Amino acid sequence: MVAITVDSVEESRRLAGMQGYTFPILSDPGAKTIRAYGVVHEGGGEDGHDIARPAEFLVDDTGTIRWVNLAESLLARLRPESVLRMIDAMPRGR
Picture (cartoon, rainbow, N blue to C red):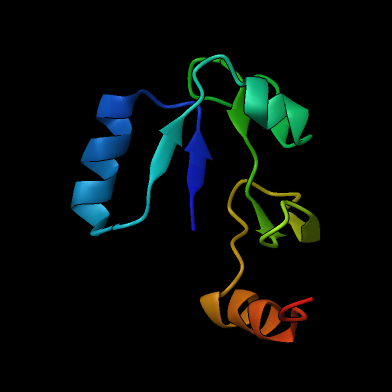
């Protein structure tokens, strides 16, 4: 699991510490990656800056995107159980 955010490295570290996250959180302050994956919410930040809308991508070991969930609301989040079911359903091996 990896998270990508427009937040600074420092802000992401603070959030990870507060929430107990142990996965990497990558900083994308220019929103290049977020734009490339089509998940930018233009002007959605507190001060009108671009942010990412909630999304989950399952990527296999070849780098192929196998499943995508794009939320319409910034408040929407999938339950972890839903994502785990999708991971379990992914084909293994070649």
